[in-house]
Image 1 (cartoon, rainbow over the protein chains, first blue to last red):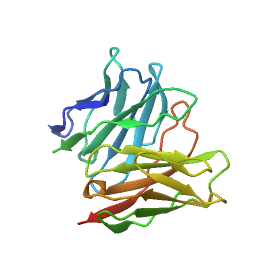
Image 2: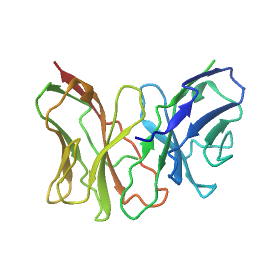
Image 3: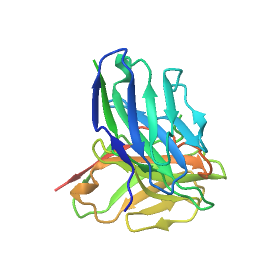
Length: 115
Length: 112
């Protein structure tokens, strides 16, 4: 069964550094998402992306964050200047369009640790 | 914010049915009930969804009350691998890029 793959599985960075989290969505999917989960807390929506532009974003997704689909397969989340509170699991998800419900398919996440 | 209420935790004996309740008393007519689960720290996994009729698939059954104010997810024969956090989510039909909003869910522990 096709999967959403995320790399790296664990990223350690110093405060103030830029990080790029990478995702390869399922190949025929057209809607893409980033969520995050701080340890012990809820899964929180960050941003959704369709047709090469952001569809929706949450309050968390401020100017420090950006997303990009640089080619036909990758979907990236960039954090420009990381803060300690950005430490979390970051999940990428994708789904296919259609009139019937198509569930979100999540990757297994990237654990970001900011020191 | 999540529009559902779930118990924070439940236990279930291995091999028995796990019945996970969800209250969604303010659900609107066009909103569906979706269930996802998260095993350990993996990404959430879709289980099932419904509007007003009961639904069944290879993973679970979903029972929605007639007034649609509550529902129950049933795992008919729980195994240790079903230990996870289960999320009940109410949302309009997932069209376009409407994001799912996760609550705190129910932590189900399946005990041998």
